Amino acid sequence: MHPTRERAKVGFQREEALGIARLAPNRSYKDQNHKPEVMVALTDFWLLHGFRSLAEIEKTIEEIPAWSSLRVILKQSGVAALYKTVMEASQEQVDRWLAPLYNELRQRDDLQEHQVDYWAWQAFEQYTRNGHFDRGIFSVYWFNLVKLKPGEGIFQAAGLPHAYLRGGNVELMANSDNVLRGGLTPKHIDVPELLDNVRTEAVHPEVLKGIPVAEGIQEYPVPVPDFRLLSTAINPGQELVMAYAKAAIHILLNGELTIAGQIFRQGDAFLLAGGQKVKALNTGAENSILYAATF
Image (tube, rainbow, N blue to C red; front, side, top):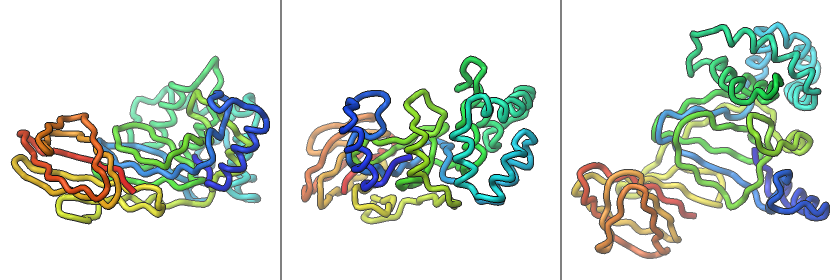
């Protein structure tokens, strides 16, 4: 997850005062900015996004006998206390909670992508080290599992925990490298800072659809002023006029375009200046798919 701009400023100044090098692997705040992000799936895409409801989390605890002791914490103190408990627990305790689940899942051959157990097993296989289990596996059960179809998007706000699991996407974010991690990664994990910033209220994932904003152009709306993400599809032989109030960076993901006599092919990127109007002609044999980042 990513901190707010206010928290990023405080964290950055604290780590500066401690003398931690800005590129040090154990640094959480590389800059003083926030990092909201939006992504659009290019393939079927699976991710974890925010906490599930209290009832859904309670059900997972009921279904996994080794987690029975956690039910009292959830009942008495809520999701924030539950998450804090597993994130601050000793590795020995985490192993005791997760070992029975590991032994159960390793014997199953019927796991499929739409099942949370499938992703838990993927995490067990990828992140188990020297017989020790990654505490991020609790998050696989307690966060929303979301599947996006190609062309669908989702927005990640500050404080909202998330993890991308599988698939290809286009992602756009604010200019920051501040990340607070809770597991399922070999990178730096700062549990105290994570717990101090994470939002544990239930989230209902909002899948974004492209909204037409001009001929042939659609936008994925986000609740921040930092950026805009747009997509364009141009049929073979079709010409489209493109113009933006501010500078826009483009990447061509499919097909071929000719702009001002220059040919762009799959994987090429180009910049259009603000106020500039150009004609893009699809000179290839298939649809040209173009994404633009502007603000």
